Length: 372
Image (cartoon, rainbow, N blue to C red):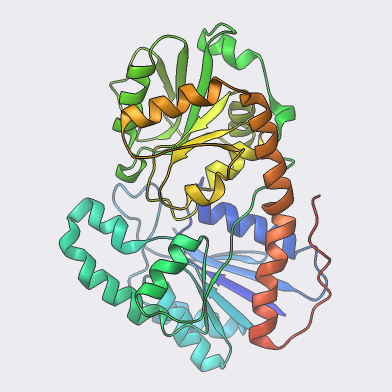
């Protein structure tokens, strides 16, 4: 079976969709009878094995993303590849290119709804855009043979728009790369913290939907005895005394070290479509404090962390204090166990291949999902 992925959600250094596609590619390479091709935008046309790029203009202030403007060249390239199934990972030009190529090849096309476009645009341009964007999403995704969503909240959103053939397909995490064994006591020394101070961490872009102002207000309320370290890009400049930052994306090895060396991840985002950083923290053996909203609430099940009842500094601060008041180390161990049982790539990717097999009718000898 030849599987082709196409998406504009690809940057040179980071991104949740890139993490998913790289893990998918590495896992598929070990499976007999499967060939995988990845087609994404780049500065120039390149071909490095199964990873191909076609030129597309960069998005100003777009954190490295590129936006293809015309679909035809992408359609022709995909037709030349002649895959047995195509997966489109964004809702823009390349999604329509994938559908057009699928029609010409007479092969099934899967749409993976990674990003909630109406909510993302509405948070920046205003809610007046929702009606138009919801209609656009409904029109686009009704064309796919199957639609995958990384969480129940996203799947339900699509169904509410009248999209059929929607299935929940969770993402995963590498339990070796993100592991409690990467805990490094030197991290606390680097931040100037004593053993009694609880070290919290947040990792990601400082975008509007992450609600970092609320998180910083919560840290002000928590005060002495708690320290938050922010890791990512576009982070706030004005920080409370108990907050520090690494204002750039770090590599996965460094991120794994930061996570395993922290006492908990705190995440104020209430609009996450999945929350890959949550799984990475749980795999690192630390509990998660989140908000009872969005996809994060699906990952932080009882015993693996705490969810604030509302998006407010007071509720977040209360949840942080409550977590550390009772058995938080055991909570971190249960978080790790939850990942091992449900969210390793070795468990979730065979589910994805199951969708492909049903659509193509091709049988493959996929090993039983297990922790490894």
